[in-house]
Length: 396
Ligand SMILES: Cc1ncc(COP(=O)(O)O)c(C=O)c1O
Image 1 (cartoon, rainbow, N blue to C red):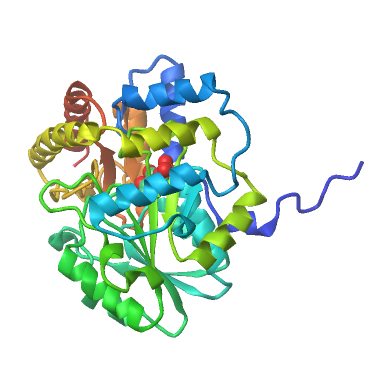
Image 2 (cartoon, rainbow, N blue to C red; image 1 turned 60 degrees about the horizontal axis):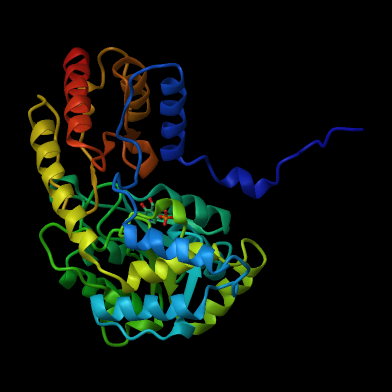
């Protein structure tokens, strides 16, 4: 049989392997060889899924809720999503404006595939979460990046955004609090951004993955503004809020025609998200919410420790994250000597020599930073930061 000349479809070459997953794979490989690796790469809570949620899944199994559901999710879960969002943020979504997906990543994928035509521009603030860029490329769209200022904590303002809006802009993506920087777009600024986009008929996607993990400001959703529902697209996830990364439940709150378009796409790819996970998600949304506050209090302690510790390393700059569970220090003090000239090399050498896994800033669109996830124990944080300190001291 003759081998195919071009075995892989061209559109796959427009996307790259997720750098966060690459780091985890390499850390796993080293661990498999018996190396004691401290892993700051993983973007997931180290807390277990709360018991009441696990029990809801057990009940779903016992009741044989193990078959297909509607492709866009059960009516029960859509209702629970709308009610929780209304309670938390004062929005007024109805189940026909809601769609359930296989995790938050999947709602972002579906939304972008449903809305972006080849050549459409999608505006993305830098630093950005890795996936946006690849998913826009996959749809044939053009990413337009907006630089933010490290000295201002990487926070986005309407003034930074406005010059990048053109007749071709289809969508603006905001992720607040941000993965990787922990930056938060304050309410007033977010409202200005909304006014800019809605006046031009541009969609504004708000990735609310970390919206419950805010240290110093009140949580809000831009979708609660009067008139927002026409152009604001909420991408939500239970992964971090309810420590449910493996259960794969995300949701979209968007205009009904977009729900229909996304459901069409989903019905030909994954079909429904796991039926058992959907039952568990109903409990996560309707049951007690205390676990969120408990996790947040723990993350705050860790954030304070990590920032203070990083600032003890000569030459390292570190903004204080306002939300999520990542810090994004500038480690360029270690560039130039010992053959390190960018963060890819920094992260590779940090892993191979100091046995600490962190994600290089290149993955998020900046070239002087690494992302450290502090969703891990204080003991691991202390161990890993000691190693980072020694590694930088040796190489700067
Ligand atoms: C900014 C952001 N959005 C969305 C997601 C999607 O999360 P999941 O697909 O696990 O629900 C993540 C996960 O890391 C994220 O960091």
